[in-house]
Figure 1: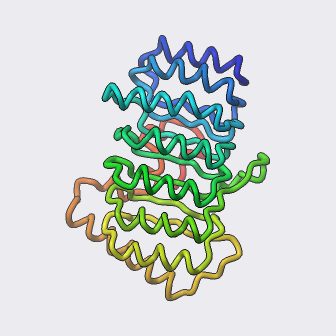
Figure 2: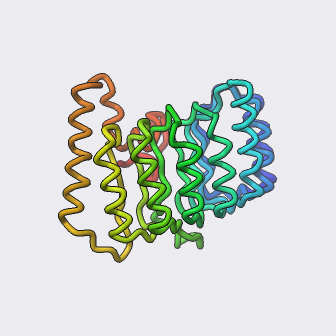
Length: 267
């Protein structure tokens, strides 16, 4: 599609007030296209779910979107509620900028910044800016399967970042699904996260597999046992929230049922 084509998408958002889901996965948006896209996004009253994965977006491209969130926060206006921006090139600078812009934007429910070349610095910013977010239910900073296929790089928060992820899990009470897979975290970091999890009754799904790492079975059982306990507790305390116990609809809105895609319509 390229930036020139994104101009037309931006115009579409200005005039079409019925569009709820916009999937621009791997459509060559690039930084230039983000300005056109966000310009249209500012006028949209209907769009809630935005997929802009695998588009070569850097810190320059994420700046307009960060400004969008700040503007919405200042006006107390609800905009998009799901943002998928994985397999891009935000690095720490762009990811931290995004996290900071979301601190006061309490309408976001789902955020995916997997495979964006981030380090422990972004994990620290995640904790500092989003730990008290009230509505965030899905958070993904892990690895997307096709990252290498499109020439992008994974995140590597390491054990230093795991300390901040543990703090996030210890204090946050909104996130139900959290993916931190393949972030170069050792058993030491997983143990720290597992300990924090014991004090969190709201997290239902935690994906923590790490490439090349053999996690002791006892540690795996400790994590899984707590997650199972949390699911049972939710069944007792929030029986009306059965939708939140389904990974597929935690990762994505129910609106994905309308999209014919192997990438969206699976658990």
